[in-house]
Length: 191
Image (cartoon, rainbow, N blue to C red; front, top):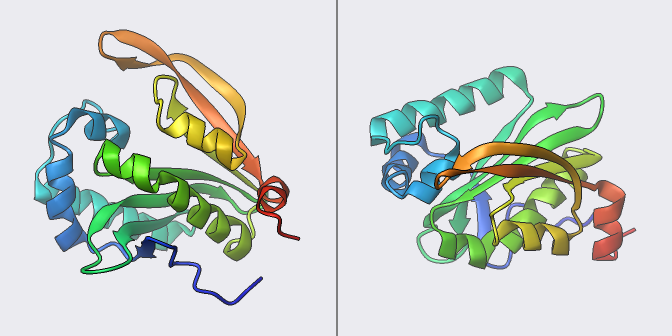
């Protein structure tokens, strides 16, 4: 493994979450229906900065106590380090070397621009730092941004939860994608 900073990419950096400051921005994002849906609040609703802050603090506390999840803010590498989204590795099963990747950007435009790099950074962290072997990520079947990026990265469709998401008056499938460490390394040309 090389000694470059795994938390810094070409355009992005992963940093700690600052619940007080980051809650202000995420609260604004929750007013956009697509962001709120991807956040998986049930029911979908705009959230106040105080609600978001409590949620972020709860995730960080659970992470510290359980050791089965890691949460990062995705920020721009240059300038003021603007918050762009969040990256989580959750539901880690240490004995099986398995975890679930969640990446959420504030807008669809940010997702289109930065999802490929953030997935690579997340996989490098999960496989090279946490020594996990299998990572999975979910996407709604109607997500035309995420699915092609996952497939191009080397993820395989592993499961389909049929008609489990109610979106715009219809039920849709949730697709589970997965990638093994050796598949990712082979695709990247790594040993």
